[in-house]
Structures are given as structure tokens and as C-alpha cells.
Image (cartoon, rainbow, N blue to C red):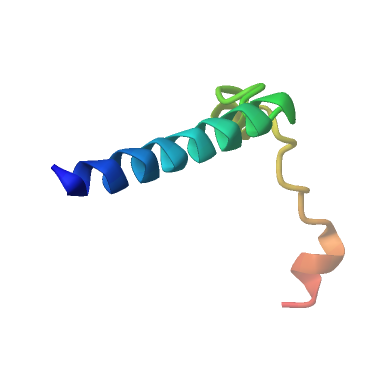
Length: 58
């Protein structure tokens, strides 16, 4: 029973720390757009085409 007097406040302190960490990350915009990065690859520019100078050197 005496162990609970120590472990419950420590667990609450750790939980409050992670809650504060989550709220601060949310306020800074860490979770603004989690979907777009995986679709960004489809809209990137194509590779530049090789010019005739590049093919002549080989």
C-alpha cells in the first residue's frame, strides 16, 4: 500500500509531462498536415531530359 503513495504521483507527473509535450507540439503545428507528404511524390517535377551533349560524351 505504501508503494502506491509513491508510484501514483510519479505516474501522474509523467502523464502530465507527456500531455504538456503533446499540447505544445500541437500548438506549434506539428500535426497540421499529416496526409500531404505521402502524396507529394506524385506531383513533383519530372526528371530533366538529357540533352544531346550528354549522350555524345558517352
